[in-house]
Length: 266
Image (cartoon, rainbow, N blue to C red; front, side, top):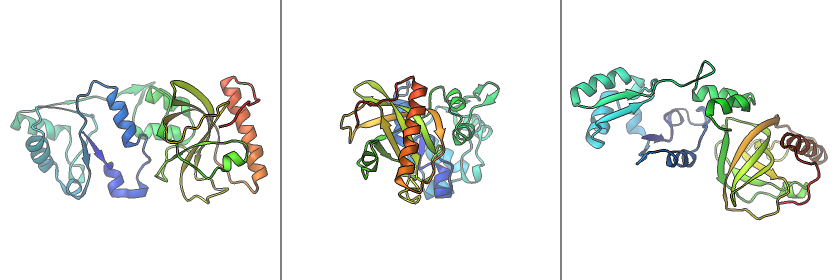
């Protein structure tokens, strides 16, 4: 069972911690696990004001008829986060269900948590984020039409709208993209608000793919972040921006061991 939106997003709105995965990405990951059913519960005013005992009685017992419950070892629930593992164990004895916690997971002596992963991503430490996640950090989405500025500059991009301004990463990265004909494509991507053009109004993931010339609008793809090249910058002219993009492409291609001359465009 997962909540949508996440409780902190309900209470803090745009000030909530950035998501590591969007809802669809979570569903895709669950589909790869031996999970029979995924219950997505809308977090609303009822849940915001529901105390722990009410949640147990109304949801776990009456709605779900729970017999065995598995939770994270730091799981809290109910109004003021009063519900915890100890309360569930006590209630389980009274109502005939058992409770198990997953225990903490450690990597190199560090307890893995979303906060720790966000911290690593926030400072551009993709290697640490990959160790904690067990795979490279990625963002999924559907390729959408943009304003074609990248094409005008000679570096067309596949664009994915982020929808939320608060993202765990920002800047320019060497990336791979999957989801197109079973091939892993290489490229360079920018995640940010494009201050040179948009003045910070919206977050966009723009990926320029190397030696690639297919139309992929509407395709659902996954962008895997391999190395951070630099932070996002505002430029005084398109010429400055274009010169920086040339350098970004060189750095990314060096990372992938590719030649610097491109033979085609998107």
